[in-house]
Image 1 (tube, rainbow, N blue to C red):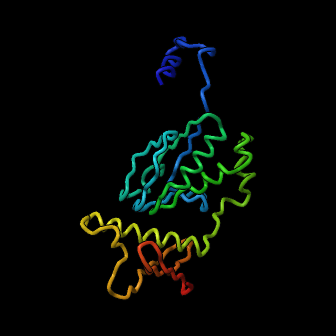
Image 2 (tube, one colour):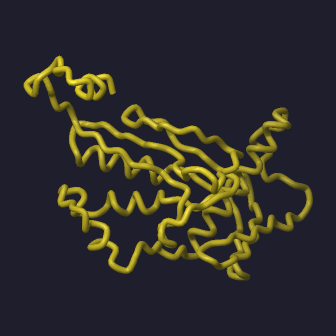
Length: 219
C-alpha cells in the first residue's frame, strides 16, 4: 500500500524489477455466504458451525465466529483464505484439503464450489481466462446429491458433538461412559434438510463408538 501511495504521488519506487524475487506459490480464495447453485444469491442466518484445522501454510483472515448472525445487509464474505507452498501443485492440494475439512453450518456458502474449481485440470495447469467458469459449468454449478452414507456420517457427527458439548457442563462424567445407559435407548431423531429435501434420521448408540442409524426407515 505504501508503494501504491508513493507512485500515486508521482515519486519513484525504491526498488526495481531485479529486486523482486519469486518464492513459492500463493493462492487466495474467498469464502462467501452465498449460494453457487442459485446464481450466488447471498445467504443469511446463524453461523451454527465454523470450524477448521490450523495449517502452517494457510492464513485465514476472517471476522466471524460461531453463533454470529450473518446479515443480508452487508457484504456476504466470510473469510479470505491464503495458501503458500513451494509450487502451484502443492498449494492447490493443501488448499483443497483445508477447505474439505472446513465445517460451515447455518448459511449456504461457496466452499464446495471453491473445492471443485481447485480440482479442475485447467485450473491446475493455469489455463484460465475470463470464460473459465462458463466452460467448466455451462449449466451452472451443481452439487453431487448426498447418498445414504453421507447422511449417516453427519448424523453420528451431530450426535457426538452434542455429547462433547454436554460434557463441558459435566466434566466429571468420564468419556468412557459416553452412550452408556441402563435403559433401552430409543434413539435420537434428526430432521436434516439437504437440497430442498428433508431426511428423517434416527441414531441409536450400540456401544462407546458404534451406532445404529435409520434413515427414512432404512437401516
